[in-house]
Image (cartoon, rainbow, N blue to C red):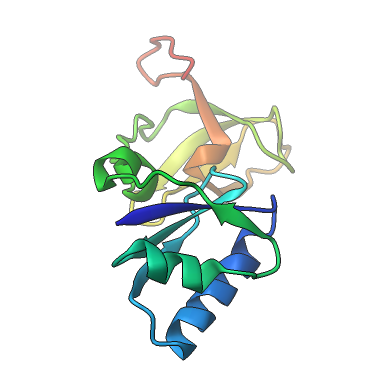
Length: 152
């Protein structure tokens, strides 16, 4: 059974550690404690029964309580499992940097490393050709090599 624990915002990591430590010390039937990315103020707790969940989170700092309803794995699957993203950037594309320190600079793609989710680009506005490795999230395709427009 998966329970939702309401916690103080931005204290989720501390609560995770405290619940895991208590469950281990008291040998409770708690299987997993996690904080999905983007879900602020809540922690998910997988336990065998409600008593184990309540005992692991009872009277801990930053814990406000356990929400009464349990949830299924299907309801939180999209928060836990990484989505398979397709990389639409190709070598030779012109991209715009959308993160610091090269924000709004245009660059040409040299190489793409799909495993690391990084791209090596050459800055077009630089006097000296400068190749920079950045994360795929930090670039936006503005012009394809063939000339087709695309603004992801």
